[in-house]
Image (cartoon, rainbow, N blue to C red; front, side, top):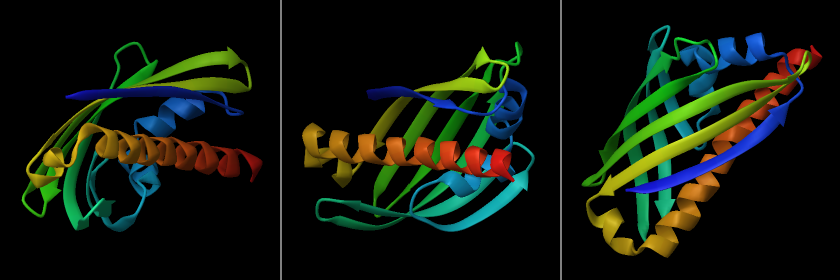
Length: 151
């Protein structure tokens, strides 16, 4: 299992960030390389995403569930799925921390477990791709929230 983490600051009030990160309809479309998305409930969705890591290319089918934190300061995101004989299990924690009345820090920590041929590619290759995908997801979330607040 590998752990990835980071943070971004968005010029959006904390209550709006909290609403965003606890909504499958908002978070789902932010997945990188998404081929298909179906929101199945307010906090659950399924997705098909394009995967390209070294010689492994294809699509993964994912199911995700968002669990809002009781304190209203973030959420947990659980993602499971796979494809091409590979498995993927992600358990994430999204933190929502007000920086000012109009800006918020969105932090994340994701524990990622990969099984199958993809896991045999080597940690450097997987780490680089996982870091890229994670960064892209949170850039997409940041951009989507910034675009929404500008409108």
